[in-house]
Length: 315
Image (cartoon, rainbow, N blue to C red; front, side, top):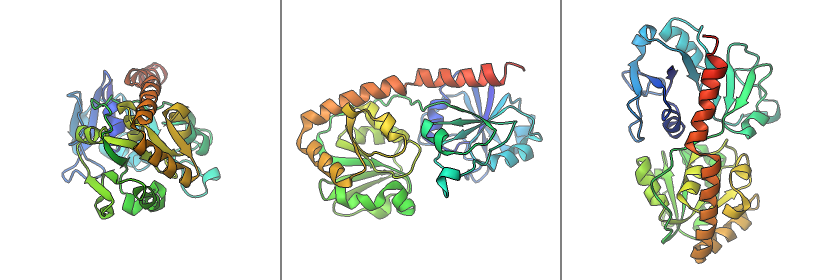
C-alpha cells in the first residue's frame, strides 16, 4: 500500500513506518513544517520516500494519513484530488473549552479520526465522524537502565515557550531535590546550576543518556501521552509523574509514583535517588508493562487492520 503522510511527529512516525507498506513523505525546498521530508535524527527505513510536493499528483496513493487540519487543503492542492481514503490521526488533547471542544474533523463522512489514546477519544467532541483508537507503539530503544547518575531526567519539546502545559514551572522544585537534566528541542533557556540541558539530541544518544539517570519525570499537565514516557519505561527507568491524562493508564502502580500532589512527587523523586534498589525494581516492572501494552507488533497490526480491512477493502 502507498501511504501519503506528512512528517509531523518524529517518534510516532518512526514506529508507523516500520510496517510493510511504502510511505510517501512530502518535501519542500525549505524543509519547513509542511515539507520536512525524511527525519534527520531518527532511523527510518528505505520504504520511506521523499516526494517533492509538486510531483505528488503523479504518485499512486492508496490512503492519506492526515495529522493537521491544514493538510486537507494541501492534499487537494498538491495531488489534484481530495477523493482518497483518509484517516486523521489526533495526537493532541483539545484546547480551550475542553469538555465542549469540537474536533476540526467533526461531522465528516469522508474521514476516520484515529485517536492515539482513549483519553483523547473521551475529551474530543468529534460529532458524527467515525472514530477509533490505535494506542501508541514504539521501536524498542537499545539502551537499558543503569541509573548510576543520581540525577532526574525529563524529555520535552519547547518547555520555555509552552510553560505550564509541560510543567516547566515545576522543574525548580524537583531540581532542589536532585539535579535535573532536560532533553528536547528548545530547552537551552532552562540551563542553570541545578538544571542541565541537552538540546535536540539524536534519539539513540538521548536514550543512552536517559538510561544513566536514576529516574524519569513526566510533568506535563495537559498532553495526550508523551512517547518519551513509554520509551523511558521500556528502557527500564522508574517513573515519577503527574496523575493526569493518559499517564494514569500507561504507568501501573508498581512501575512508579503518580500523584496530583507535587510534594508527593518530589518526595518520591528523592526516595528513588536515595534507593537505587527500589528504582531498579520499579523500572523493571515498568519495562515489562510498556513492552506488553506498547509493543511495535501490536501497533503495526492494529494499523494494518484499519488501513487494509476497513478502509481499502472496497478498493
